[in-house]
Structure formats: structure tokens, C-alpha cells
Length: 411
Image 1 (cartoon, one colour):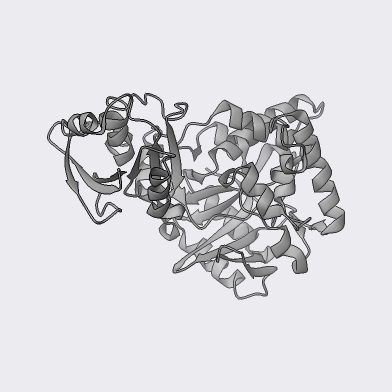
Image 2 (cartoon, rainbow, N blue to C red; image 1 turned 30 degrees about the vertical axis):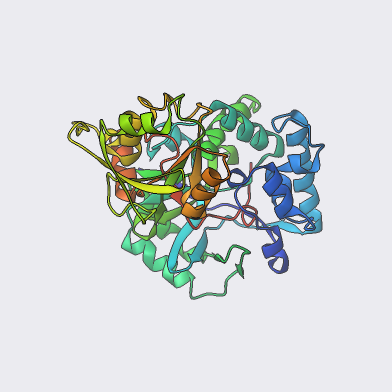
């Protein structure tokens, strides 16, 4: 049984929502965040990436960064302004990118459900990133960005979401990247329907935001220790997320670039590839089917297809994914990349940047070889989570992404 709760969102005044809203903290580096927030004192990156207001040499995980985030959140409350709703409510959040539209319910969800695997994960998290957001939550007393959850859609919930979208929206704007964001406050009369229907759901799934969820769980433990009268109903026992029906979601590929060939010449590298893959030149930089890969090296695209040496792994979902096949039969044995989460010889490029970005990195000499992947399906994600397995790191890239700053959960 899953728990969903309405909450009193801290949110911007309607006329400045488009100025406050920012990309998620973890899709940009410091320089990109600084550029996006330039000339806009209300941009929410000043809270989620507050190091952009500190000297360049400042460690992004230094205590002063989190204190600055707290300071900036308090400033935005006054200057934007950001105002907290009087009563707990559900919100409906619609995102449209090109022909892709997804509509979810913004709410809070139980940390206990996360800890007890009612809310299922499909990725491992990195401690340094958990530490970062845990410190951010505990210092600001706020969850400043939502976890992206999914579930198998329910007709009754779809119906109240559709009715909500017939009302006047709180916000409607198109961000600089062309994504339309529309947000409604759900009529209070629908609360019981949503709560009742979600209570019948066996599992919810984290689509994106594993570090945010893990950090909310860790922050809850810290806050609980600091509270002498813990009841379980405090806001820190719940985390902010937006829940989307799986049927509406689209996953883009998460591509790979590698910086050196592990002391191999290009010809030696090709010969080793041929042990497990067929290799032929192609004009198409995107794989057209599962278990195929496109590789860019020395100004040429190649199509790789596994041969008979690549075996199906019984009793496993994750080991048969494209990302696992590439890792197990090429990246690890040939390029020496044993743990892609920590190896400095590999980096990951979200599918939204396209294959042009892969070509650019190789042509500029910043990478030696790039791999274009076929996207994982939402069914794959759910099946892996149901099986208690985890995907290799950087397997999924979801678009469109939620904007930070439109809804904040105060704890």
C-alpha cells in the first residue's frame, strides 16, 4: 500500500513563476548554472546551485554553500515573492516538449515507503551526491526539487487529473528550451479519490531523482534525531515528488564517451571488438533496434551487433540490457572500465544533446570514442525494479524534466 499526501507548497507569485523556475540542479555544471542564472536574481539555481554566488575556488560541498542556499531561499521568499499555500493540496503538473506530453500529480510521499521498497529503485546512488543533497535539505529545511515517480496508470486518477486541467492554471509558460509548463491546484474534493486509489497500488517506481529520494531519507533520520517529540507525521517524514502514469513517459538514450583506448591502437581496438561484435560502417548514428550500438571513432560511425559469443543471461533482466552488454563485452574487457560509476575514463551524455554532441567531443579530441545507445523502455525499468535488480549507471534519460522552484516542500 503506497502513501500519497497533499502538502502546503511554497511557490512563486504567478507573474514571476517563469523567472524563478530553473532546470534541475544536476543537469548542469557550475559554469552552465552560472550562465543560466546570470542577470536573473530570482532564478532558483541560486538556491539549488548556490556555489555560483561564491568565489570560484569554493568547494561545492563546503558548509558555506548550504548556508548560502538557505540565505538565498529566504531572500527569494521576500523578493520574488514565494508564498506558502494555506492548506495542503495536490497539484497537477503538465509538461509538453514537441509532441511529447506528460501530466502528473505533485504531492508528498512516505520516506518509510522508500525505505521499505514500496517505492522501488532501479539505480545505485553515489554517497558524495547523497551527502550533498542531504546537507542541502537539512540546512535549508526544504526539499527544493521533486523526485520523478511513475506507476501503472489508474483510470480514476486520470479522470480527476483531466477535470483539474479544465480549471484555471496557477502557471503557464514556455521555458527557454521550448518546454511548456502548466501547473494547476487540484480541487480539494478530489483528494480522497487520489489517496484511496494510490493506497491500492502495490509499488511506485523512481524514474528519475534517485539521489533526491535517498537524500530525503537520510535527512529524515537527521531531523528525527533532532526532534524530541517525533510522531511520524512531521513533514520531514515525507518527500516531494511528481507521479506520472508510465504510459505517458518517454525515455531517451544515455550515451557514452570514452577518453582513451586503454593503450590500444585503433586497429588493435577494432580487432578486439570483433571477438564479440560484428562491425560495419554506417551513415546512421542512432541504433534502430535493441542490442545494437552505434560507435563514432576517427570521423566514422560504425554499427555494432553482438555475435554468438554474447549470451543471454537467464534469471536476470538487467544483465540483458543494451547498457549491460556494452559494459560486459566491450567497456570492461577491452577498455578496462570496470566500474563506470567511478572510472574517470568514461562520461555520459544525455540523449537530449543528440549525437552531434558525441561527434563534437571526438572531433575536438576531448574523447577518443563515443557510443550511441538504443533507449531503455519504461517496462524495462519497472521489470528491473520488480526483480530487485539495478540498472547500470546512467541508463535512462527522461525528457521533459521537471522545473525546480515552482513547488517547494518545507520540512
